[in-house]
Length: 74
Image (cartoon, rainbow, N blue to C red; front, side, top):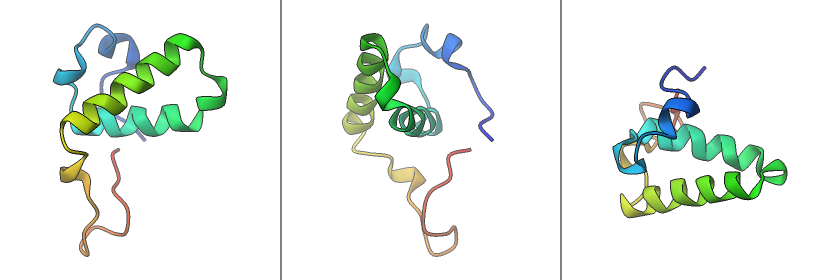
């Protein structure tokens, strides 16, 4: 379960100030609901992806042999 700032708070915060866990969680969330997103939702998702790319991906959330095969952001 995600424990952190909700989207209402994050919309008032620049993407550059989001944590990697917030970016990863909301990127995954938007991927899951992409067929139902409005134009505004698509724009927000694109901005999240651009921020992830500007940080060279989510390197601190990579899975390792000690933490399983995929990263957990919650």
